[in-house]
Amino acid sequence: MTTVALDFAPYVAPVAKPSTGPSRIACRVCGSTQMLSYLNLGKQPHANARQTLDGPLVSSTPLRVFACMKCQLSQLSVVVPPNELYGTYSYRSGVSAGWRAHCASLAKQYGGAGKLALDIASNDGTLVRAMRASGATAVGVEPSRSFEDCDYDRISRYWSAALVEEFPNLLGAVDVLTAQNVLGHVADVHDFMRGVALSLKQDGVAIIEVPYVCDMLRALSFDTVYHEHLSYWSVTALRELCNAHQMVLSDVQPLKLHGGSLRAVVRKSGDVAPSVARYLATEARDLRKGSYLRFSERVSQHMLALNDTLRDLVPYVGFGAAAKTTVMLHCLDVRAYPKVVYDDNLHKHGFAIPGTRVPILLASPGEFDVLTQPIVIFAWNHADEIIAKLRGWGYRGDIFVPALEPYWDTLEDA
Ligand code: TYD
Ligand code: ZN
Image (cartoon, rainbow, N blue to C red; front, side, top):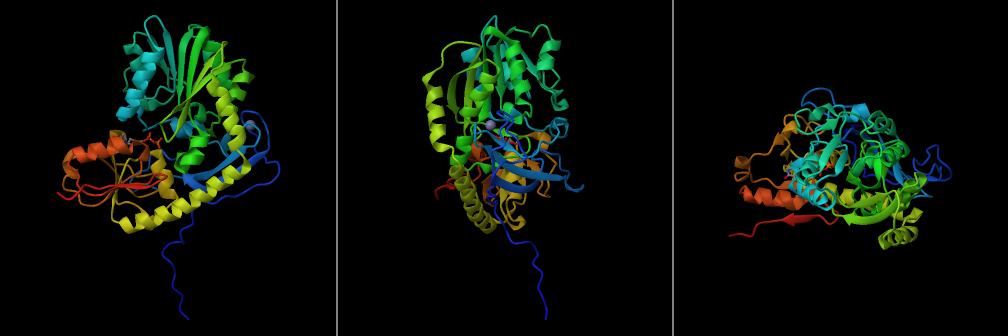
């Protein structure tokens, strides 16, 4: 009898692993051990790791999400040491025009002459520069060595309460503190918030932007789950954290960024906008065990369908070597992989998508008017901007966006 070996293991989509009873993991906000395990993406490499084209594949770590049944914070089951993730860091927020516009509007609203603005995890300095343009004195805090070529004032350290105590100029001195997409990256959220409280002036304001867990559940954006994102915030959890540090969650606004985020406006005292109670009531109704498990089921179905679509598109090319591209590829069958992935970030050029041999190429206009293969935009949160750019470069082929409702952008025949 002859047996035929399969080239690859059959494709298995992410699955729900419901847990019962108390877990060994405690919620990092409220300490509860009533944690529901609801998304298991297997072992994955660090999504922004530097993967050389022909060197060994970078190592993988389990990627599993638990929800706290008390404060509705979702968190990963493991914490990768920050230096492994951020020592060198290729992510540059200013690559996106949409992000630059977002920072400019934030600076216009909260900056201004005479103010001291402090931006935590300032990355390439996009917001610090916008604050400076508004007339404010602006300083960033950024630990990664990867931004040495970026010209702005910064403290090259991780944010912490101890850091504020070391810099007397920061103690009770900051008018506007910004923390965009960083609270979700921090393991000790209480220390983070202690630092915020210590640095703010009595009438200062902290603008904290985080991906919103309800948006992730609604939009099936499971590919925003990766090792850098330790927490997925609810308003319930944000308020719990603020309360623990005698801070007031004074307003919450939705943001159409990264697949759905929240802007939390935090102060030392003052009124609370009606939006906060509205969000809390909605979460009390919608964030239940069944909602998390339904999400997981839908993710599995979505991935199965997406896997089939992408396999039929092979050979195709990808656009956007985002962290979410790494996650997405590791949830797919290798036979559904793109040939290459293009990206506008020079710092990613010449590397591969972590844990794979799929090369990342710098996108340059001349190539796209002759390209006939379909393009899949893995960085679906920037799809409009990228589609406009590709069409502007003369690309005439089909574009596929693998979002919640996958869609095509096809040029009409002339
Ligand atoms: P990002 O939205 O930051 O997602 P993640 O948090 O998952 O990394 O990443 C977007 C990626 O897309 C980033 O690598 C830059 C790239 N990009 C381009 O190459 N060109 C563009 O015009 C835009 C908007 C993004
Ligand atoms: Zn909790």
